[in-house]
Length: 198
Image 1 (cartoon, one colour):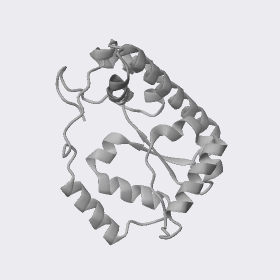
Image 2 (tube, helix red, strand yellow):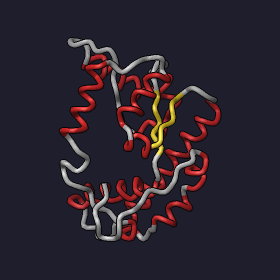
Image 3 (cartoon, one colour):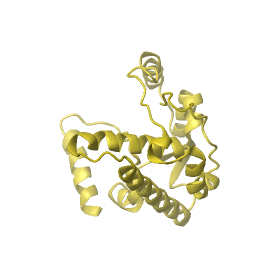
Image 4 (tube, rainbow, N blue to C red):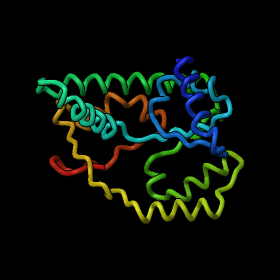
C-alpha cells in the first residue's frame, strides 16, 4: 500500500497548497488494513482507534454494500456480499490487532464508541490532552454547535437487520469475541427486529 499512501499524501498536499492548514482530521476504518503503511507515509500521525461492538457495524456495512450493488446486478440473495464484508472486517481487525500487539503502548489512543457518544466534548478534550494539546475555546464552541445543529438522526436512520443475512447479533458476537474481549467492548443495545438502527 506504500504507493497508494504516497498518492494519498500528495492529494492532501495539493488540497492544502493554497490554503495551509494546521492539521488534517481524517476518519475512515479503511486504515485498519494497513496501519504500517499509514504510519510510514505519515510518521507524525496521531491515531485514534474507536472501538465499537462489531455486530451492528458489520451488519450496517453488509446492508450498505447490498444497497450499492442492487442497481448493478440482478442477484437477489444479499448473503454473499454480506459474507464478503464480514470477511473483510475480520481481516481488518486481525491486521490491526496484530499491529497493536507488536507496536506496544502509545502508537495510538484507544477510545470506546459508547464513551464518545456519552460525552463527545469530554472525550475529545481527553484525547487532545493525551497528545499534549488543548481544545481551544473556538474549537469547543464549534463542536458544541455542530452537536446541537446536527443531531444523530437529522438525515434519517439506516435500517438494517442481521437476519437479512442469516446472522444474529449473538452469533456475530461469538465470531468477533477475540477482538471484543481484548479491548473490553460490551455489546450494544440492539433495536428490536424491524426497527431502525443508527
